[in-house]
Image 1 (cartoon, rainbow, N blue to C red):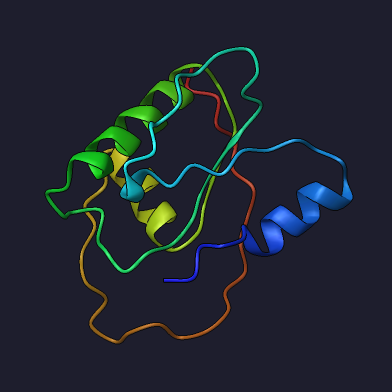
Image 2 (image 1 turned 90 degrees about the horizontal axis):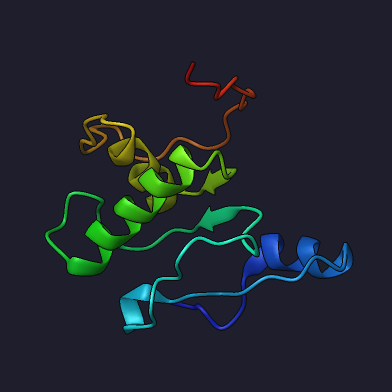
Length: 113
C-alpha cells in the first residue's frame, strides 16, 4: 500500500495552506483525541474491510462516532466510507458486482436534531 503521501486531499490542503496531520493507525500510530485543533477528519482507503476484527478499525469507528457527536465534518474514501457507514449503524457488505467507476455525490444535512 502506498501511503507515503496523502494524495489529492493532501495536495489540496497544502495549496490552501490548511495544516493537516496524517495518522496511520494501521501502522500503530496513535489515533488522536478530538480537541479544538481538529476542524475535520478524512478517512482514506485500504485493503481491509470495516467488518474486520482489527483493534484500530474499532478505534477509528469510535473516533467517527465522537466526531459526529461533536459535529466535526467527516469525509471518507473507500474504506473510510465503510467506517463512516458502520459508525452510523449501517451494515457493510461485499459488493457482488465490484467497483463500477465514478458516481455523483450529494451534500447531506447532518443536523441530528
